[in-house]
Figure 1 (cartoon, helix red, strand yellow):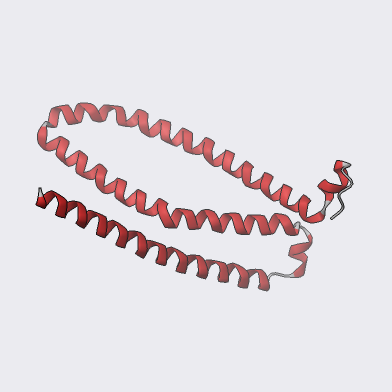
Figure 2 (cartoon, helix red, strand yellow; figure 1 turned 180 degrees about the vertical axis):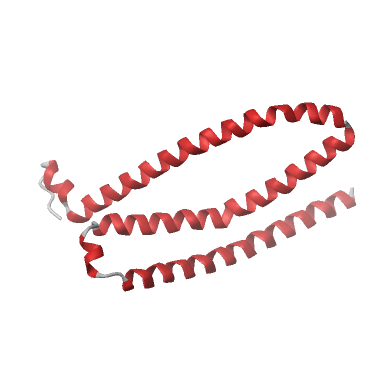
Length: 155
């Protein structure tokens, strides 16, 4: 029982340390990314900004960096952890019963195809969402939504 308790305590400590380190690395990378994006924006000619709404540009920059931050904070940890878990499961299955393990892998192509199809649909939906957020942000920035709504609210 003490060995099990020790294993749980070790797992808890290493998980917390992993989360702490990944958070520090992710924040450092986001800091660098934001600085590089800002420096790149400073180098662009003024004519570049004539074609874009300020709200749309700001929304895309903020939301895209936020998404990258979320992936770096938790997505990467989950992906690595899931990969190690999957490898362990495959090895254990092959060790216990190779024939049954190989038979159970016949479903993998269907799962991969379903995952790819879902990912493509999710990617398109996410892109539409970002475009809509950018348009709404640009409209709010310009005040057009308030003026057109007839509510009498003027920015």
